[in-house]
Length: 188
Image (cartoon, rainbow, N blue to C red):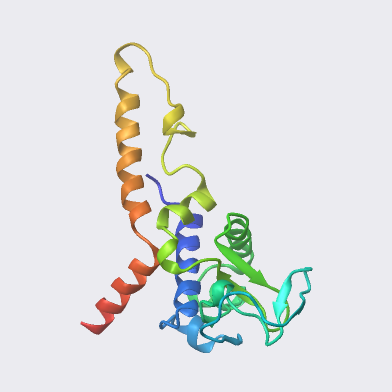
């Protein structure tokens, strides 16, 4: 498995957004970014709303994280700065994450990015697939599509086993798991 800069940046950005949305210590993004705090609680269904800039609904009290998750909306510029990611490169990554249904964007001066579901429901595998496609590739194709003949026939089984082992690890590890590990390592 090769982890590209794009995949690494996507994971770092998602963790920073997750930390801000859960009220965890997101470092500079969670504590210094000029974003509006999101009220905790709520059902995810706004009681009063107005049309948002993109035609979507924005709760009357301002933007909130989907599902009433609480925390803050995180601006792309704050993410780029806190994670050391070039903003123009990050914007493409955020677009891929939004298209994959992992992030929701809120436009406007009080806008930013929030997770579409709780950090415990988003796996590392979800993020990697959103920005990079298949977890493992053989000659640029997904491992499932690798074909061999003759003495090399058994290689396909090896690549499928590698793919399966990687999938087990990245699909069982959530953003919330990584945030908890970070908190434990800073405490003790």
